[in-house]
Length: 97
Image (cartoon, rainbow, N blue to C red; front, side):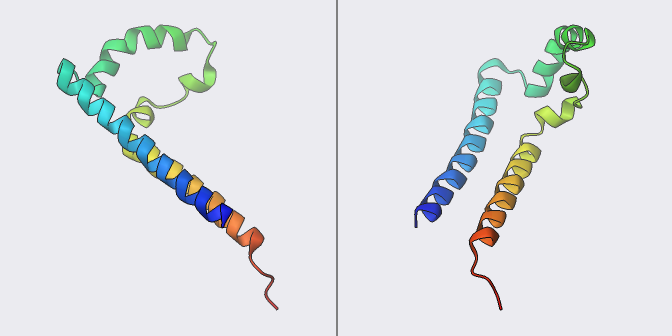
């Protein structure tokens, strides 16, 4: 029973966190008139300077669209979560004859 409750709470938290992130993005756009993509363009010069210095090679290798695709990030995190839950269920499933 504990695992079921934890799973329900964890899945709920994952969905709520994604929804709040998207809501924050919409609210910021409404308040400023600047979309996330336009904000990234404005920040690009500074980001390019930081990433070109070689201190953050893994971050520098990430395509920009990966970061701004909130739907894609949600789908990825949900998939990894469900993969882990499936492994947990499989691990605790009764042995089949």
